[in-house]
Image (cartoon, rainbow, N blue to C red):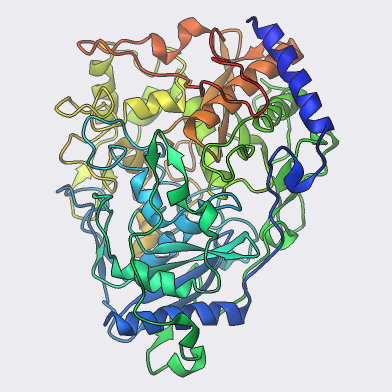
Length: 619
């Protein structure tokens, strides 16, 4: 099937699909959230229910509640709660964030954000679900299996991001996390009328960790969180345990049965002072209790996009406090892409997305919903669009993906990395960034690695950032961008964390130590991503930018960004398109390994109204 014919067939299919469907939930299974929000009374009820269960479990918990875009609505710290909690990845690693000790309020926010940001009207995920899909194997402890489909996602939404915002600045839109995403059980989403309105996060011990055994049961922190969700629980039909990825059922909770009847919980007012107190985390909030924002309204920072270029494509935009699009399609700041080209790339990717079968969304047959971003060679976001119910995490993670593909495909990546200072760990040791470049040069048997114009996708970067190469194969050496195993953990994983480390941990020491560049490199200010969905954009052999998609399965992200870019090039006829095949990282065979890197991995039969197979083959 030629690329031109494939594009024509796709356009015809989309014309039928979109002509036969109006807006809203009828659009090929596309779900549009209704504007619901948590009130102050709701938040108080959630906390009261959780506190009652914690008391019954003889736990002194800290409980946080956020809304769907990450605003902290309350943090309640019970009397006797541990003053400090220690980061422990459970794998014996000693660097990175391992061993860092912080008050418990730092940890309930990432637990809650993980559940809120990874849930939608079509899927309900918890921090336990997140832990299952980000470790070195999927499933965790299932040896000789590749890394999780969202390997490395824990290091997004960082305090140094230029995309996610700081709550204390009074801005609208998606908020940062003090510690990225959580893999520690105890974060559950909250729903009203079938729409995500936020999440609850609970920590009750002295360890912030990760579940390395998906078969264990009865986590008391989850029981406390589950009690809190009474009246706001995720619909059973869309919970993670109803979703299968790569033939494996995802986990929602392992909590069992609560000891209390949440409907009989005492009123919130009676708990203040007697059971604990509201606390405030500087920069985030928590005291007093505040209401949540309704997702899809201007106050949430995410609203429908009136741009006529995207009419009929279910496009939404991210706006500022004046209701202006933060990332409208525009020409590259480097002069290498026109506004028309950026617009068409996003439009074509949206068309593919509206045609793609979702992997992590119920009911089966629903349309995938994603966020799409385009960046120029300076790393500037020159366009971002999303679909109505796309996962909120992607607003930060998709620019991160695009920038990752852009940066590592540039001729200056090696020099930029070598110029950085080492990551200065809080335990007094340091990790030189330049060592990763040296390791990559040895790995590829090339002194010009990351300076020779090879095109890297985020999937390719993930391959060399895993603690085993080939990915998941026990007993093999680590990829050059990873820490050696077993001195590896999700809290000490290698280049991804080390790039961010100094600016990431600074606000943990002093909240005023905030920057809007995590790495010190202009092309990757909010860090890098290690899973699929990001691709460099070329005009012939010239790198001109990058595109990324995310919000459903990783293969779906690859499909939407890669095929969308290809289709845009066919329409534009300006030379814009994917990297020439001979330049791609999947042409590399690391010395002594005999295994090629992966560049793109599209689903075998991806479309909801077509039996077409291998739609990315030959592109």
